[in-house]
Structures are given as C-alpha cells and as structure tokens.
Figure 1 (cartoon, one colour):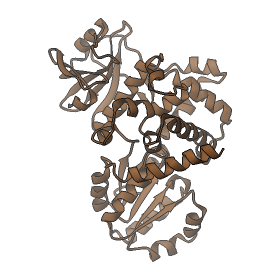
Figure 2: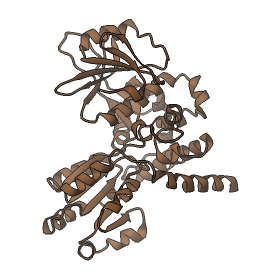
Figure 3: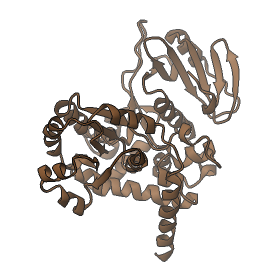
Figure 4: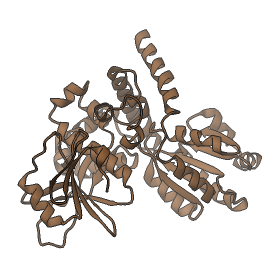
Length: 400
C-alpha cells in the first residue's frame, strides 16, 4: 500500500507541473468566447483538463474565482445564490461539474440579464446532453460553447520527448499521458474507470450495478472499430438491445465513446445502416483489454482498430467543422472516415503499416465516394504519393 501511495503522489506532483507547459488548442478560443459572451460552457469528459484550462486563462482575467460542485465547502458558498453573485459581480466565476446543480441555469439567466458583462461565468461540465439542452433553452444568446478533448497529437507533438507510440498507447488524459511509467499510467486509467462506474454514473441519477457496467465496458472494447450490433451485444450480456442502446447513449453523453454515422451516397448501392463504434481515448481502450505496454499492443488483435480510433479522434479534434462519417457497402467497399463540408470531401484510411497496400475495396470505395483528396495515415512520419490524389502520411503531415 505504501508503494502505491508513493506512486500516486509522484503522479500528482509531476503531472500538475507539466500541465502548465502544455498549450491547449482551445485556450485562445476560450479567451475569444469570454470577450464575446457573458457565460462560456466548456464540455468534455472528466479529467480531460477543463479546470486546468480555465485556470490557465485566469491570468488574463481581472479577477477569477473557482468553485467545484463536488466540494461541499464550495457548494455551501452557493446556498444563497443571489447574495453570492452580487458579492462577486466583478469577478469571473468558474463553476466546475455544473451538471450537479441543474437549478443553477435558470438563476444564471436572470443574473446575466441584470448585469450583462461579458466573461462573467465559465461553466465546466462532463455530461453533454442535459447541459446542451439547458444552455440552449435557458441561456440562448448568452453563452459560448467549447468542447475539450484529452491531449491531442497537435498539442503534444512539439513537446520534448513526445512520441506517437506513447500517446497512442497511454491515451490523451493528462494524468495518464504524463505518468512516470506505463505502470503508473495503467493504475491511473484503472482508477478512472472504477470512479466513472461507481461515482460518476450514479451522480447523473442513473443506477446501474457496477459489475454489470464493467462487464458491459469490457464487452464494448471488443466492438471498437466495428459496426454496432445492439442485439448481439445484448445477447452476450443477457440484456435487451434497448438497454444496450441506453448504456451507449450514456457513454456518448459523458464523452467516453463515439459512434460514427454511415456516409450516404446518391448511388443505388446497398450500404450498412448501423454506426461504427469507438472508445474516444485509446488509453482507456487498452486498459479494458489489459494491454500493459506498447510491445503488448503490437502483438494484440485490437491494434488495427486501436490505430483507426486514435487517428479518427485526432482528426476530428483538428477539423471540428467537417461532418464525419464512414463508408461501407454490403459488397465490402470501405473507407474509415469521410470528412465533408460545403467545399471539400476528404477520405481517410488508417493502416498500421510502414508500407500500406490498400485493398480493392478501398479503391472501389474511392470511386463511389469521389473525394477531392484521399489520405492513408500510418504510425510513422511518412509523406509520399501512392496514386493520383492519394497520399500516405503520418499524422504530422495530414493537412486538409
């Protein structure tokens, strides 16, 4: 027990200092939102760095006050909301885990309307649907919305000692990525999963037996990168497909998983209809598979799907304004992700190989989707032309 205590003490001491040196891509955008709106909501999974980001920009603010609604002392300070906000009218008030006090939103509306100064509130939350609904209904026109992910490739690539392998294996949660060793990173991720199941889910008012939900997460880890079949998953666990759907919705709302919709073409092709499923953080995926280090990952059957999910998550963080989907026909034509806006259509395929050799299905999918440009992303710093409008690149060279 003493050894474990020392390990976690080292994690906390070392990661806290390192956080201050890593520039989050959303930092400037947060400051812009604070200059534009009375309130800004930062959404993201627990422990992804929301409070650290808020505190990092606090030096640019006149006065800053941080409250955590998981701290009983801070909750007590809000017992009389009217008195508290009037006493701190000139400060930027940051309220963490704001979803734990749903009645706060209606009060904030009247408070903002009585003193419409931009940059008054920063609200941090780790459950999306209810927060988005409450902010859109209650604070419409008064709030800016920011999504924060764990550390991305772009945020870490210029840091001393960065490697794709380390980020891919440990994932982007700050305390996992910045841990001293793979062992301490694994301990942190295991604790994250345990706390998520035993504390975070019940705090949202949802009662699910912890052992059942842990089994559910373990089962889902085998569906990472695959087209969802709710009935099959339910049969394996002895629960209904509607319960599976409800659990997955909960995981999506708390930013733990992502489902990617099907790309629809105008061609008369029979396409799969169900979405593809991914754990958003590769480190959590590896923990659920009990993968202990990068060498274990190299020989594990999940490696291809793991790389695919890692690349997709970093691409979507880099290009949030693109609509994302995947393409797969019933006859086997497939590409991992299609990115589209009003000007461009981009196809990305993910391959764990230094010399990828795409299948015939990839080339047929290219003919069906007709992208402006296609990329095959591999885990090296490659950058070369494979065919007309098809490049093989590392994440560092993927530029749309």
